[in-house]
Length: 94
Image (cartoon, rainbow, N blue to C red; front, side, top):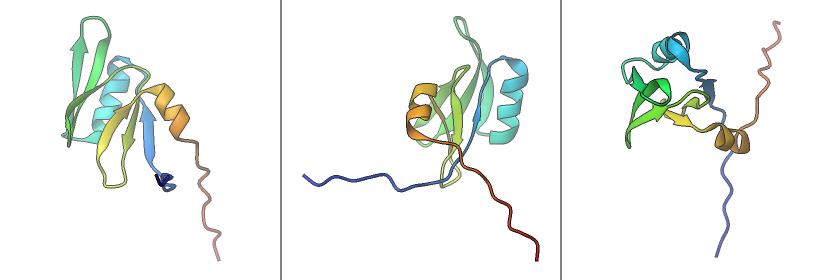
């Protein structure tokens, strides 16, 4: 069987820290495909309409903007195992 490696892709991601302020920040970033929800056990959550249906981001989850502009939540342990920070280097002025 052949093996494959994921191509290196730079993504934008923000962590939902929980609460109303963080939820509103995520909703502003994502746009009309997101809204605030409430879970009796968790509290404030962010609901995200994805290509696969509606997904819930719980406090601590990362919300990722994918390579095609799509948004989806990712659990913190999966995010840490999959992604690493990228240092943005500004182009030097000539």
